[in-house]
Image 1 (cartoon, rainbow, N blue to C red):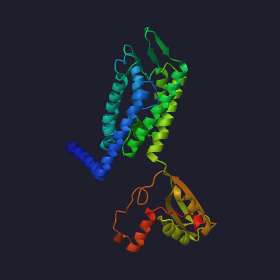
Image 2 (image 1 turned 90 degrees about the vertical axis):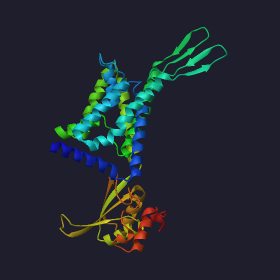
Image 3 (image 1 turned 180 degrees about the vertical axis):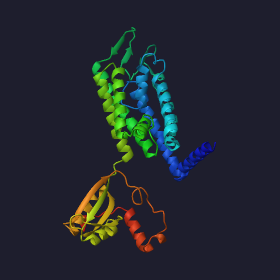
Image 4 (image 1 turned 120 degrees about the vertical axis):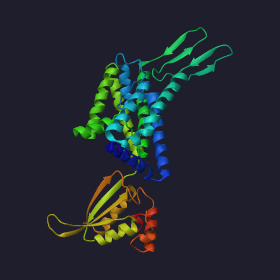
Length: 380
């Protein structure tokens, strides 16, 4: 009984921490990002992925394969999406923990419900137009078959359904569906959420079998692709279209989640380290860290400057270091994200008077860091 009480107490503290570690406005913004991410994901699945049976990995692909299997097509793919979403959510809750499940909760609720809603809209809505006073022509665009039926006065039906048009619709559905999925997942990641789904399998395989998440993700996606190959009548085109969809999805995740920002970390070794450090702090408006070490070959003491900056400052800092000391040893390392003042935070969490320099100097440094310098190295 005591262990159960202790477990519930621990989960309660985790939930409280998740909802109090950030300001309420930030939490609300993150929830909106996850919600709109689920909305875009469901649009991509409902209007492009599911109607065309595009298997590219994830819950929607498992739903397509399950619906194809003999005796299991009594349940629609949309309902399978709902079932698999909550199966993986419960697996994550039981085996990974409350913290992980909280990050997938909004998406697990809204995503399958949106899929059901948009699928109903897709199947139920048709546009009717009056041709003249007595005859109606109904033009129905069926995304899954790319067929246009035109009803004429004599009752004849002319059907235009070419293989080329179907192939084009197939590829376009993969591109647009993958783009919507990738954008939605990227928004969910930006809001601090998780896409859930088959990611739970990857985490569990890594935890219990020691297989890297990237490796297990590749294996799971390959198995799903193989299942999709049979579900689509062993069509090589369908498999290639699934790969295209997965590629577009991955590309959009990176673009939305990581953005166009690119950051660098530089380590500089130079006897003129004091001048270079002065330039970084007072001209570039960036912070720096002074490290002390010994040369591995010479065993001499050396001073190393480490600094972080974005892509806009790359050329300037490179040329400036060279102008101060052409023989300086400099390494630049590209990094995806930097957290902290000047990058992910606009203002320091301490008062100006708490900074170990004069308030006036601190204010000047803050102004330089917050306003991008317009002049370049060549204007000096």
